Image 1 (cartoon, rainbow, N blue to C red):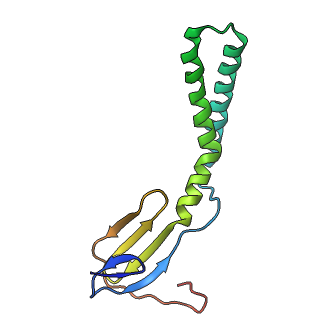
Image 2 (image 1 turned 90 degrees about the vertical axis):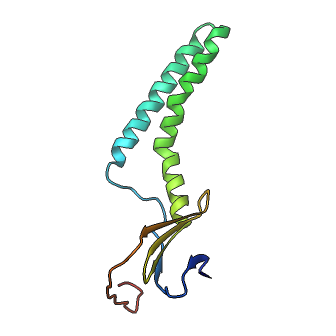
Image 3 (image 1 turned 60 degrees about the horizontal axis):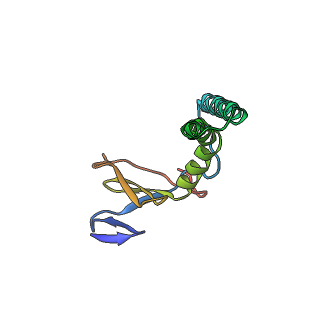
Amino acid sequence: MAKRNNISINEKERILWVGHPKFGILFRKGELVYFIFGLWNLFIGVFFLKLLFNSVFLPFNLPAYFISLIPIYFGLYYILLRFIFDTLERTKTKYYVTSTRVLIKSRFIFRKVKIRASLITPFSYNVHNNGNN
């Protein structure tokens, strides 16, 4: 096992292509549904907090304060944090195509190497001057 490009590959393998996913914020199909769900959660959480703060503060209301924060956390995640985490993960991800395997290496929080295909059937590839195939 030799280490090239910080991944372990066999001596018989050779790296055919190295790439990475698109950088930046990426909107996929169905993002509008998540955004609406996040707005709804924010609305519900703020509504319940306003009701609790307008009522008389009693010690047994304390768990209700924390429970009403849960929809706010979900709303913030679905509106904002999900895009930030996805962008950070894609900036730390690399794709490797070797002569026998496809590897996906991600270093966002933990170092992960996923093997997507154990055997690749023979194929041909063309690389243009601009790097696209």
